[in-house]
Length: 257
Image (cartoon, rainbow, N blue to C red):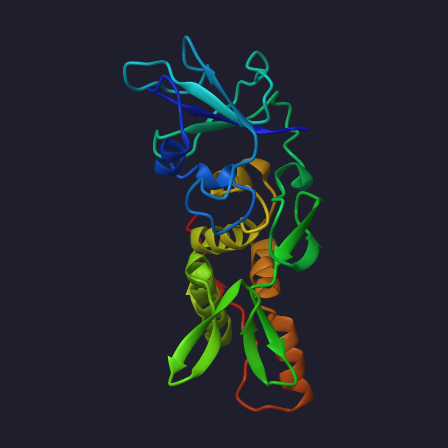
């Protein structure tokens, strides 16, 4: 099993609160939508260091620690390419280097969101969560996220996405509107949104995705379209000859050479 190593400088040890403060707690949770350690974490090891890894900068009174999934000692002798993953809050590297990163199954959460498997630029298959689904019978765009009954007046109740997933549901709504209006988005935003969806099923962030080189711009758009079921909605609209609905694609800002 290949894995990412996370170097946290300036501390003698680490706990879940410290991981959360550095935006790393979700790299060790069993399921998405858990903002703390209350639902349990995967097994991970913490290795105190006498000196920072080569290529990574230290800060504070302590050399820092390495945090990684699993309970075996990290291979630091062959891990040499460290990248700044959070403005100095942490550094990350692929254990052992050599250009071979963790496989999707190495980072897959024990519990995730159902969806479709697609092959990305790295040649590997990733399960993209279906955040929204077009329901042909109800003629409605329905969330495919954990929901709970919520009162809407009187004795009426309706299912609503639970608060832990409200942000990702809002993201899906924004992405749908961007597609429908063919809005212009930056490359950075495109990748960040695609990784946000993938992180529901994998312990991964923008930093890991970039280090793996797992997708290009076309892949990022495919991830977004799959997550919001744009194809299902568009096909049904075309079948019914619905006027005025445009299956646009967000325009990507062109970087100046």
